[in-house]
Structures are given as structure tokens and as C-alpha cells.
Amino acid sequence: MSSHGGVVLLDRDGTLIEERHYLHDPEGVVLLPGVGEGLRRLQRAGFLLGVVTNQAGIGRGYYDEAAMHAVNDRLCALLAAYGVHLDGIWFCPHAPDAGCACRKPAPGMVLAAASELGFVPSSAFIVGDKPCDVELAHAVGARGILVCTGYGQASAAETQAEYVAADFTAAVAWILASANSLGQAGV
Picture 1 (cartoon, rainbow, N blue to C red):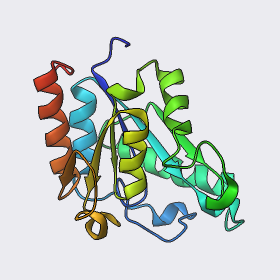
Picture 2 (picture 1 turned 90 degrees about the horizontal axis):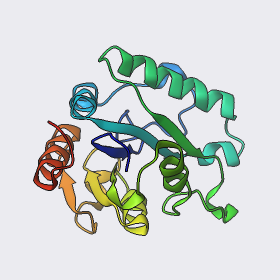
Picture 3 (picture 1 turned 180 degrees about the vertical axis):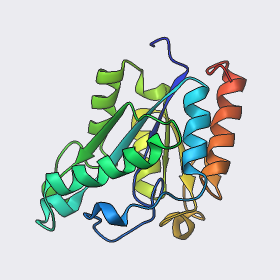
Picture 4 (picture 1 turned 90 degrees about the vertical axis):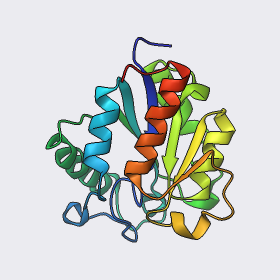
């Protein structure tokens, strides 16, 4: 493992930003409450931060990669106002029926992130608002956290997440407490 304190991989829509159906307009990017502050706390604690996001709208022809990158650029600009820098954004551009190795819950995006950032996938925390995010965590042996924002409330009762967080602030608190108990991050 690298010299960083750990890695948190995050879903984008419904986890970091308000859920919008096939978001492709940067003007529609709105941070969820507590996200900027929470990511700043994680970053200051030594965590690398990455986004892993399914973008089926590309595969379905609803928008192109340039539109998705514009949305991601807007997200990064909003986070920069909090002093937060994302260490990477990985995306799956395929439709659900494409049979690719990168669409969550398949491990492709996490494996790519691990290769680029230099971490062991099982050491990561994965935060998202859908069962596929938690299933992705299980697929790579990571710790999965379901946030009850976006679609999370609907799946909270049936999830196999290690932790179900009411919101992003609660997820961050759990990650920091868990990392401290493991001696993983320097908080």
C-alpha cells in the first residue's frame, strides 16, 4: 500500500450530488449536504478520494462522454471550493446489458483505480446509494457503506452493507472511526 492513509471510492449520483435522471448538464450538479465538508475531512485524514460511476446514458445514446466529463468538471469545481481534490474518476460508459467488466457491481473500475493509485482493493471503503455499490465492495473485499441519500433509503432494509449511513456526514464519521480503529488513517 502507498504512503497515504487509505482510499475511499465514491459513487457520484445520489451519493455526492443530487440524483438527476441521466444527468448530462453541468448546471444540474448540486452537492448533497455535508459532501464538501466530509470529503475535506477524509482528505485531511490522508485518504485518497476517487469516484466510480456507472454512466449507462452514454451506452444508451442519451449523452456523450464530453457531456459526462463536463458534469465531472463541474463536480470538481464545486469540491475545489472546499479545498478538495479528487484523485481520479473512473466511469463505465456501457449499457446494463453490454456484459462489460466495469459496470458496477463488476470490479473493473476498482481494479483500474487500484492500479493507478497503488492500493489493495480490499483496503478501500466504497460509498454509494445503491445495492450495486455495496455489491462492488463485496466483489473486491472492501468495506461497503450505503448512504440513505439518492436511492439509498429504498434499499437500506435489504442491504448487506457494513454500515448504513443516514447521510454523507454519518458515512464519513464511520469511515474515520473505522480507520482509526485499524490504525489506517492519521486523523
